[in-house]
Amino acid sequence: MEIKLYFRMLRRGWWLIVLAALVALSASLAFSYLATPQYQAAARFIVTPGSLLTSGGDASAVVDGLDTLDRPSIVATYAEVMSSRRILAEALGYLQLQNLDITKYEIQAVVLPESSVMELTVTGPDARIVADLANGIGYQSILFARGINRVYELDFLDQAIQPEYPVSPQPLRDAGLSLVLGAMVGVVLAILSEQIRVPLEAYRQRIRLDPQTEVFNKRHFSRLLDEELSKNFDGVLCVGLVELNGLQDYLDTLPSAGLQKVLQKVTDTLQKELRGNDTIGRWDDTSFIVMLPATSGGAAKRIFNRIYQALLSAVDLPQYGVVVNLDPHLGGAEYSTGISHQELLEKAGTALEQARRDELNPVYIWEMRNPFWSQGE
Image (tube, rainbow, N blue to C red; front, side):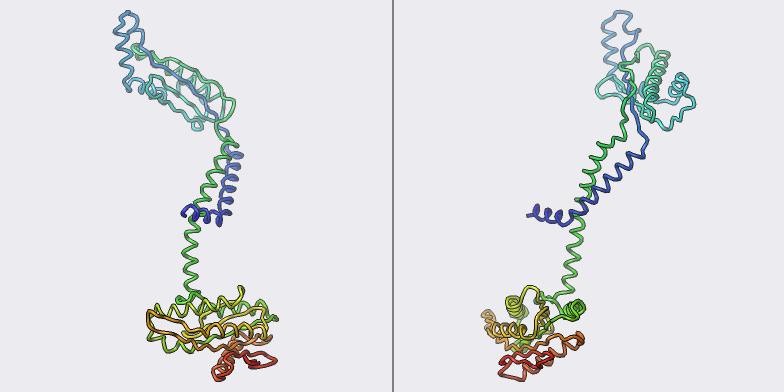
């Protein structure tokens, strides 16, 4: 169930995923175009027992020397030597690169795990210089090590080779990664936006709906009516007030759960008898209001008559020992060009008042040509 929920979130927020992926892809391509290519060269070195340990031919001394190499401090010391400013200055002098802007180059010496091997990497904007620097620093480090220590020797294992291709940027690789990362960010944004939207939508629904019936409340219905009249100024439209006189006696005596059950039965009846584009609202404690777009007075009268017949059925509440006779009356009005929203509601109210007074005809509709078109006509 949760997977389906997240899938629906992603389906609604697909545009966020696409947008985030495209933004990330565009940023990656722009960076690849503007960034200075960076090249990397690496040289490897090995530390071995020196001549003082091996010249005597004592095998045990050689073994002891190899065993001592397992101590991290010895190889780590040579790594620190390679990273020192002194060795760098000597290497630049040796390579005749004293005027080089060394801040554009990154130099790093690391000890490879579980070994007496070190790796020196140089990264920078010039492919030839990064290789020369890696070898120059290594050569100066070897000379320095030989001058201070003959017990252990430092030597090249692999010299650096001038790289043919930059390590960054790599447009195809970077674009692919950016596209994937952008899509992942888009997924997160889609889920977050949906989680934010749902509470906001629930809040908007609460302020638009009547809490007991979950149809539109009076204020929101009036707003919808205004919008409909402004869109169809010359169109046809009917509104109708559905009053339940029999409910008046139960407002203060019937428990809220029982009252809500009665109101829900009325709501279900209205939704069943009305069409999909019709609108239902709660007008006051004992009445509802309906709006029928593109409906003439004659067509509305037939619909109101069906509603009246359906509401004649009493609502049985056996748990409370009550049978509620709704005693419905309906008054409607047909919109006519030139009358306002308020005038239309007043005409519907007048028709409802007429329906209350006429015991034989409990459904009345006002229209411009034939005011008080009653049920019996």
